[in-house]
Amino acid sequence: MFRPFKKDFTWQDVDLLAYKQEGGAPFKDVTRQVLFSGDDLKSELRYFEIAPGGHTTLERHEHVHAAMILRGVGHCLVGNEVRAVHTHDLITVPLLTWHQLRAGADEPMGFLCMVDAIRDKPQLPSKDDLEALLADPIVAVFLQGENK
Amino acid sequence: MFRPFKKDFTWQDVDLLAYKQEGGAPFKDVTRQVLFSGDDLKSELRYFEIAPGGHTTLERHEHVHAAMILRGVGHCLVGNEVRAVHTHDLITVPLLTWHQLRAGADEPMGFLCMVDAIRDKPQLPSKDDLEALLADPIVAVFLQGENK
Figure 1 (tube, rainbow over the protein chains, first blue to last red):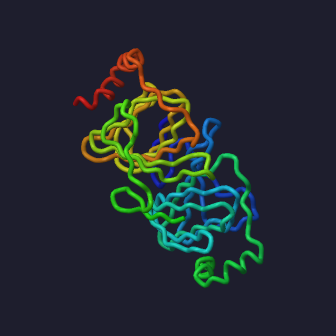
Figure 2: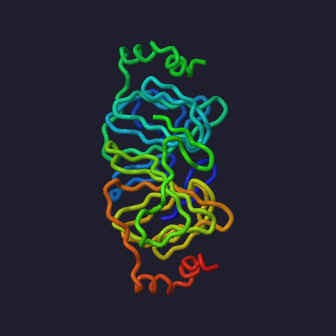
Figure 3: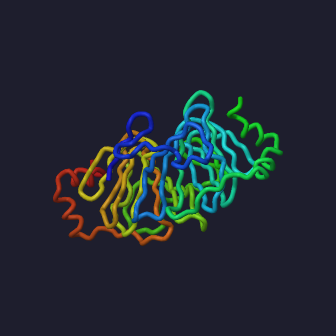
């Protein structure tokens, strides 16, 4: 019933997991911890942490992401909007909307993400989707961050 | 999609609300902010803040509370267990389990709480329930905190 916070944004009795199991989705330097999940809850609350310079997968899906930055700062793409995000900022990712989070170069960025327990699998962008996103120069700068 | 964190643990476009609307449930110095809620989510994420010396209602219900302390320190009762809680600690309140949170005397304590969107109303303790809780000296000291 009580799981204390430990050093370095880990928690007692919470496993530190790989971000994704499958091999096909591109991401960089992300960990996952499932903080709350179970039969008596309709949703899950997860904590993801992106190492400096890392990023989550660029993806979309038919479920909503409800996220709060818990640690650090970075940038976030939702749809075709890119924003600087800071600790405790809230991010809502609507249905079928492309999104990605990127940590800054100097410190990790961690965020909570609430999702429905029963949900669809993420979709990756096609070549056409990616070209459409890259047509916006601001989005292009964001997505090409890893090449800086 | 983006709602920045503001000063004093409030957020852009999030209303600062009274903790409870009804008059019957005893509590002291608590505010409520609904961070995420809507038709496309099976759960809600709320932020509650207890002023120094304040406390939530002693209650139980048939839904689970999944909570994280976001700010400050205090004490928490779950069932017949009382624990000191600190920023980022996790608390799970199982079905039909008495619980209450109390802030310390010196600073506010804020916490996130994830719940199913569709849920039952809280139950308050009967005189017999309260006597059973107070029979444990540790629980009694906790519950009588407001009389210190």
